[in-house]
Length: 107
Image (cartoon, rainbow, N blue to C red; front, side, top):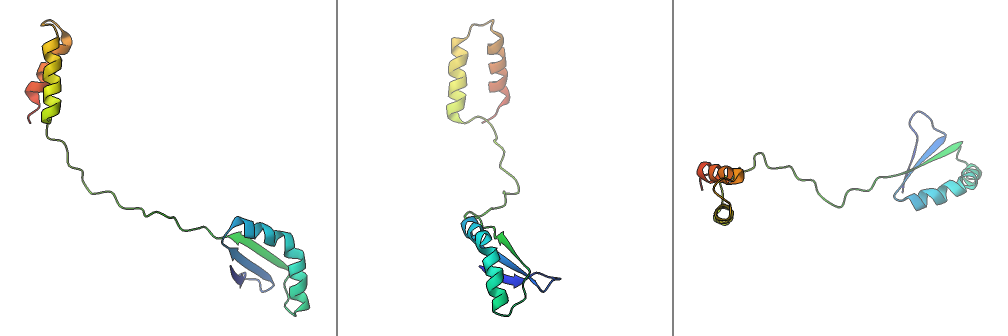
């Protein structure tokens, strides 16, 4: 927990806590806490309680500048397309599309 006086006002205490359960418990006892501070000689009219955000457990890394673009079909893909081509009839529209694909994609 971090404590400090709120900027601009010397009678408002600011508490920064690490969890919501601690903040909730402090909210419940604020009136008695203000009273005890007054009995100790500190002038405090209000106490602000806030939860400090936890730092992430993971690290964000920058994406590489450029990804390497694929240069063509690998051997397994080429064999799969050729296998499908053999199963299609000679007048199939899909057959002509696959022939164009195989013709235009260098390895």
